[in-house]
Image 1 (tube, rainbow, N blue to C red):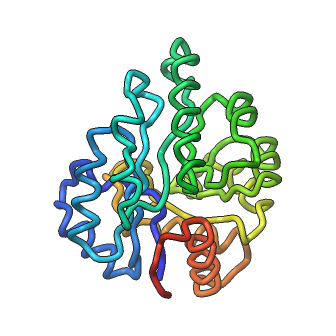
Image 2 (cartoon, one colour; image 1 turned 30 degrees about the horizontal axis):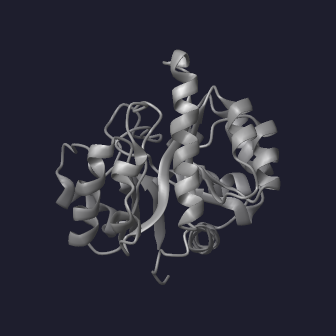
Image 3 (cartoon, helix red, strand yellow; image 1 turned 90 degrees about the horizontal axis):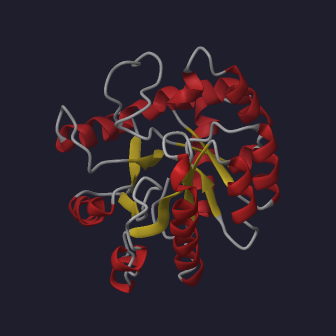
Length: 252
């Protein structure tokens, strides 16, 4: 069984959520972890997890939403929900809004403290913010570098701090040689996979809306990089995800 460790099931899917989940199950993607970005997505994500089998949630506020108060959304009730297994996606993104750097850091640090208080792993978004990310994410935190496309230098730092690294459909892109090289270097016991759907559709689906079933294409490329049989990789990824998210109570 494969696990899509990061997808946005609260977004609008052309096929409809029922079909999206069925198609995933049909290709052995038996577990999906629904990440939130907009705080308005948290309640709908929990409703999806309640309705469908083997769907879990990471609740967090993306750096685009710097005016949000995390304590308003990441409440005790939410974080004690059995379907909530982590805090994410959270982090820093200076690509579009570098002028909000100070507010982004403030939002990031508040959510990290919430994660620490509740002993929950974090799913980290970082874009053009490597120095600040490395400075803030000390080894007292645990989690995953979501959709990792940053440098090997940042990967080395975060490996030393015990973090996992998630490969997305970007790994399959023709111009992603440097990312493939980074994942070749990352130890097998620190990798997981995701779609980040409905974004980042892998080859051969580029240009189409991404769905969790497409995580299989990323797995195929990752298996080639790691010189593993797909069944070997399946077991490795499953066990890694269980260690990353201890509250993800599923069996292979």
